[in-house]
Image 1 (cartoon, rainbow, N blue to C red):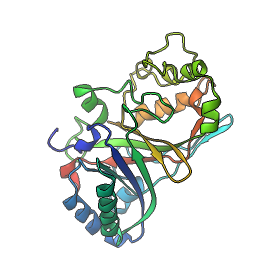
Image 2 (cartoon, one colour; image 1 turned 180 degrees about the vertical axis):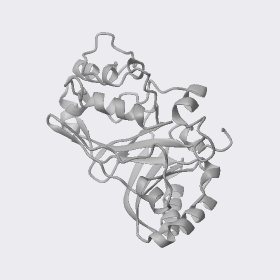
Image 3 (tube, rainbow, N blue to C red; image 1 turned 90 degrees about the vertical axis):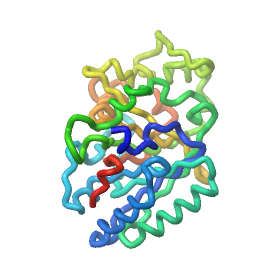
Length: 287
């Protein structure tokens, strides 16, 4: 499997990232343009995901691919903003990624329309802009491969990965007004040292998303990065999995679907987008 998966999913967060979200503009050109995209990407510098509408336009039914759920809870909404095609561009050079992004956009123009582009970056030692380390509980090595990639389902599915993508918008006025010890309790970890708090409240993010607390365990591989534009900033959350089930379990726990306890993160941040994609194994990009 290691020879065919999109390797960028397993690689560390790059210095610079750019996320492109596309809608279909000409369905008759989709198959040809996707072949062109496959020929110029390698699954490492550009990770590609297909949305449900794109799969259907190709006459394909991808087992496990579905519509991102729109979820509401007391005082908050988790939106669903599906897209047909998602490209995650990875680089250590902002100039290079800008030029490569433009080339991909022009290549896709006959069949796709760019809806949104989000610029991301590595902050410190893989920190969120809140200053807390992101992805602390990520699986590693073979455990990461097992969590993130489909196996045992045969040709066309094995080596693929599903990804949930959300753009979270931080309110820095609210964030900076929260006392440090209170922020530690919101996160469930200490900002300094990243030590997990055993006595963190049930609303802490660590308690809400503890992968081992689900039955079976809800393991995901997080590859999130801070983003910013001229006026706003936050976290571009990306969770890869062998299915979308683990992410949905964590999402519903965060909004208190079962017990009414809402994740403390919502005190200073909220998702403004939400979409699911299927990231095929590199050799399976068959249109």
